[in-house]
Length: 409
Image (cartoon, rainbow, N blue to C red; front, side, top):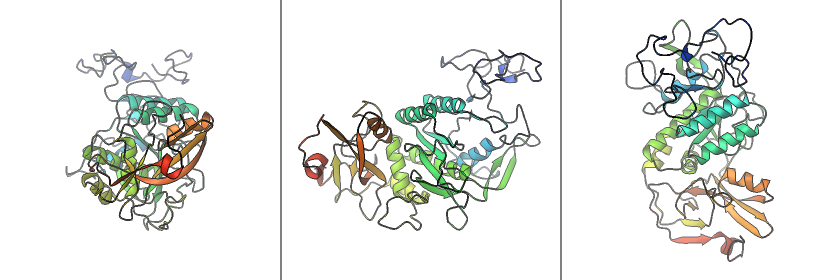
């Protein structure tokens, strides 16, 4: 009852078996009461049997339990450590607290106990998380190479309303791993304990944000102690990533109607700018700066004073080429007040007889694939759900910046 050769078909292999997969057994055989977790019925008709607690896309079963096939494998503790950083329960007198201990974790296994995974297991895991309605998909893994299937999964997840956050990598070079290196993904780098970029933290033009990533304390797992183990000093962009993911889930809890673009904007507009010059919006080694949880949370609960703002329009959020994706107010893109540095790139997309502006990375890439050329117009700020909607002036980008009275459709 294991897909030993990872071809998507269980038990089509030959040879001696050493392990029977307990998650494929029924309730009675597992000595469990009959319920939806083991009744061998696809109760929700999503194609996965008994996936009450997530899914394992390596072994194609409903158990995401660490160490089932190799308790001593290099990847057994990784998921537990990452989850602890993001959302370990707080105020319970045990261990430690994650960033957002009121959020829910959807456990998904995309790599095995020996740290092996492939683009199919990762891509299917992303699709599954989006289909389950995950607000944030946190990915502490990566590959040197881009993959179209994984990229399409990321785009589908964002279109479905998920924020995708991923680790930049630990190679310490201009070599961000995928999927973090996709423009749509929030790419996270690691800071050391002096608030400098950690020497191992990979960087590049698609880096978005930094977070502490050295000497992190978190929960862990071992076969000897699977329920109450802690790690006191782990390092890597894998652990910087859930700090960001946990902060984003907290933002979503404060403003449930905020879109992925708005959540990312709130995160990146309210950073500690570190050593980034004021005239530079984004730095290849530091992104838009380091997370500032207090400042970011305050942004989500405090309406922005719009009395001095200028709104830019028309700007697509993913609906010019494909009428889906982001739905935010028509005049949500504006100049930045009070010294705030804009972090939402507005691109001018052009080809003969057609032109539009967009803030959707997915749409921009699709436009370029169909013959548009793109150029960065500006970095802007985004309106949040709690902001007032009155602006002093609305600026039409075509008539006032491009001397065109209407876009050429």
